[in-house]
Image (cartoon, rainbow, N blue to C red; front, side, top):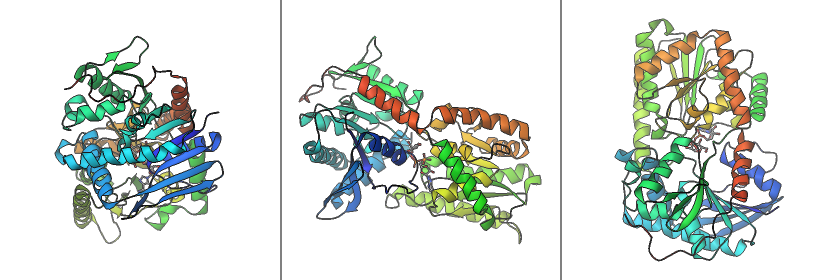
Length: 469
Ligand code: ADQ
């Protein structure tokens, strides 16, 4: 079997036998172990003399690079996280554009492709992950690399009217066409991409379903990322057997609501806090009977909008507890730190409601992890935003609109009262989907399609695009 080369923004070597963080890391780790290969990307280090490190563990070689301060500011903090992340999450209001940052983004992609080139064998398959690395394939083609290259976008893809707010959208999207296969989380994302390609740059949707644009032929598909349900179930059970984790935080007699997120404005945390407060105004009978645990460790804290959302949340949490708490009841526990995976699954299992209400999310693995952690005989209820990719699959959750505070409060009330038979029906339906579209299925289908699809040979990069908009 050909080797697999995984390229992702951050690479953290995984020690065999350790409980790894979810999603991407676990999914590609197993594929790399099976076929052998390289995991290539940024080490997380920022320094004036960046080092390249190579470490081989079993079948996998980890090759990681440091970034200079300027690279970090322009490529990572700038164009990736202050332009692409907000725009791709439909937040034009939070986005900024700076030409130097875009140049830095292109430069770092070029530098990474050049560093990868000498490590490649002709039949290696390259799988590139996420929005930091959109131009990576074009840079590879520029260097004469002809290997098959696939790309998976973990975040949503915005409709053309939003995407075109990015001034160099045309230049950026042209680079995507140098991949052989582009994977999206949902059909909505794939259609938005197809819409851009066919309407904005007059690309052609071929009879075999592939697309041709900028002189390149490529394919776009839907590959919803999943979880490993058996592993989660085992972790949740063992965590519960050892000690009920919730007891350490809260009174066991009360109903519990849990949310776990990175602290990010796309996750809808402020709206969620307001909905929780509205629950007690609208349904006062729940006062003292419910507690809400929100775990949200800080992320990207050196990006300004992230500092702002943190302040907003702290103030909202203080307001709720100040207004509603009593000597024997703290309605909201807001924990601003990260937790081990085993503890999280235990908390999920203990909670009567998983409250997952992003304003926009590629998938949201927490929704799937919450369901997979439940006790099949007495499962909790998932309250899920319609704007999470997961809502396309988990249709038996209580689906809410995160902009509708009262609607969310009503869904919480309904979940708190839901009879056991209905909870079981909903849980079983969601589990059957989580099992059939698990993490192995995500990875295997993507790699199968990447290996199978024979696009027309990728041309060397041309000096000027065929279409200029
Ligand atoms: P994220 O935005 O990070 O990922 P999500 O899918 O919810 O969002 O979480 C990824 C993993 O991180 C999960 O396994 C989760 O358990 C873990 N995690 C989240 N918050 C945590 C916390 N507070 N403490 C410890 N662990 C935590 C991006 C996209 C998502 C997409 C994933 C995978 O934004 O839409 O689902 O990639 O493709």
